[in-house]
Length: 116
Length: 113
Image 1: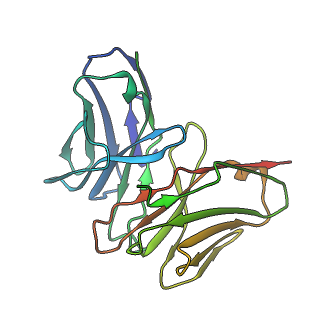
Image 2: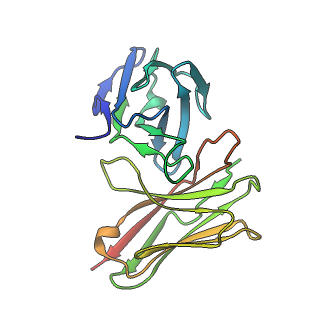
Image 3: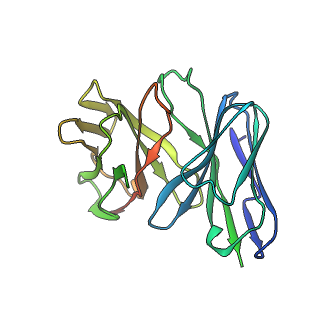
């Protein structure tokens, strides 16, 4: 079983609709992240959470919100989807206590979102 | 302002040869660097990392070199295999700081049989 799961894996929606992307992890990590990937732009950080009570904006948080329902769950919402939010979305987790001693992140398989 | 730059969007090499992927950074506060590999329809996976106290880290066929004075790192894959064909992302962070990873745009490596 995958350590980091994302649902749905693919979603097509219309402009103005509310969308929620969900992420769950079984790694027991405190830290969770949401990224989006666009062609030629790499991975850009949307929001991150270092524990259940900690939520922080990333590089491109406008138009998005998040909820850390539990240590293992971190959801991303698009309150009113627009076409330029069409992208591949990745959830990731990390643990400062990782044996590497730093922020090695483990990614989910991604959600492909298309906003028409 | 892009703090981590991968100036080559793509690279093509022959199987058995060396692949060299390059990454430059502008933020002198970065002190830990990672390479991630991404196959289509999958999330990125961690490949190898290096701390700024080192100038080289090796793991099997993969070696990362860090030149702090030039703010440059490179990933060497020797010998390259067709299964290495993927997009490679360079990432950097400041330990003890915000500890957010900053990613480059990625380089698509194609290893031809």
